[in-house]
Image (cartoon, rainbow, N blue to C red; front, side, top):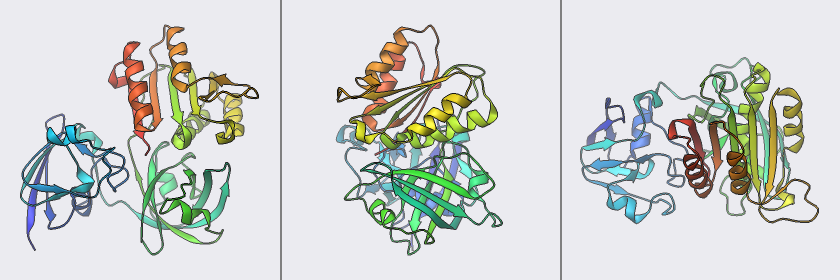
Length: 341
């Protein structure tokens, strides 16, 4: 079986080399050799693992064009989770060496404690890993990270952000968009308490960055609220005094979830407030009537602060918020985001 040499160069000019087997994608090959490259969906959907340029022959297979358009492909970009080498490759990335993790990512068995539809399209899932087990994910994770959830038969997998804080009890909590065509979410909806799932992780760099006492503003769309709940919860547990704001974007009132958690966070955090932003206004809505971008622009125009901005949601939301933050003088070092698709 042929093997190809992969030479990966990071943004800060560090070099990593590993081999890739025939009919093996680059992300899987690296992970097999305990090199964990920045990634998320592993299915060519989110665009998180986009390489800036690749030299060498490869095929790009089974991906969502929304994650990588023809104009990007024309410049040499590719999704590493869907990149299958046919020769030795040199890959240039847009992340630093410090963003790469090394070591074995654990896969553990968890018991389902609860599955509940909290809105018509959001599923709340709580699972528990045996607290006396090795590789306790809930204790080793950082607030804001995600895991891959797999059924016991390993027939599919999806990445979901963790909504709770690190703990020694083995508890992991998720808010998951339930899609009618969702390969895994539809199965999770029918999962009963006591059944088992495989959890692999933790992954991700969407975590709190320590930049002194700078204000922290969070922007979420839909279930993009999940990792932000974990971050806010951790701030509350640590008693962090940073001025903190959340802008939570929704289309309709029926999509609102976790309001009681946000209310509790408001009482626990010393300087926290949140806006629930409805893009399709209704007379009965008692919160902000307008898009999350409109609410955010109003806030930017009425402050002299330059907060760190954390964003989680769709590509469209992230690109729009990044452009808006740049407009008000916030450089990309102060913008941290994770794409949900």
